[in-house]
Amino acid sequence: MAEKEPRYPLRKQVPSREWSPGIHYAQFQTLSPCLFPRRRLYDFELLYVRQGKLSTKMDTEEYILNSGQLIFLSSGVYHQNAIVSDSETKLIGIHFDFFGESIISSDEDMLVNEEEVMDEKFALEAVTAPFMPLSQEPIYTPPPECIHAMEQLVYEFTMRPAGYEWVCRGLLLGILTSLLRTQSSRNAAKSSVHTGRIRALIDEMDSKLADRWSNKSMAGAMNMHEDHFSKLFREVAGMPPGEYLRSIRHREARKLLRETDWPIEQVGDKVGYPDIHYFSRVFTANEGISPRAYRKMSRIL
Image (cartoon, rainbow, N blue to C red; front, side, top):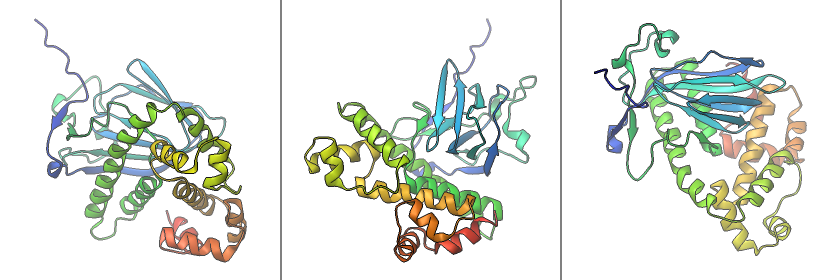
């Protein structure tokens, strides 16, 4: 009688103190429209869309990811990625395992050769109560601090200063925790009759950063009391409206500083801070360095 095919990903219920991830790959990627081969991984991958659009077919499901979304790709699960935007798509790719168990010496070690499958190499997914497995619902909208941590991890992994392994491990634990915490807010958001309206408002905020947004005006547009609106917004976005607005403005400012040669004043105006001095103070408070210093550092990568 033939052995039953294992159901991937393989999972292991463990206390949180046993999570000790190993990072195998962390890079910014810029890709033109294309279709990648169907494949499986021995480890896990976080694939975050910074700009553009990504399609991923996994098992019988097809997921379409827009800018600001992340997909959790599991060890042993067949998937096929495609860049489906009209122009270039910018990604962050992070390969890892949960227990530092994988021996990875080259990119090829992460990919399954279907002609010579090594079952013992499939990494285990750590599961810790009260959270559900990260692979259970693989699409996430990570909060700004999570995106920032991914960018820092790429920098550490690329530049490899002394002690980078410890820093990368700590950053990845923070990233995974952040994704796990979004599960509760995502579940709460599903139950709200106002979720669709608030998501549409969030999309509008993302596309009109320079507009004047206030809790009072947004609550009025939604025909809600301001306190009730703020509570519902937090359930959907994972943070209060004002904090969310600051975070997406900061995210866009970082992107423009990295990817354009616009003057600092123009970047600030584009994201809703027409006063260059105020923009510099707000950016420095969030990033720890000035806009000019951030642009200089980003050009190193």
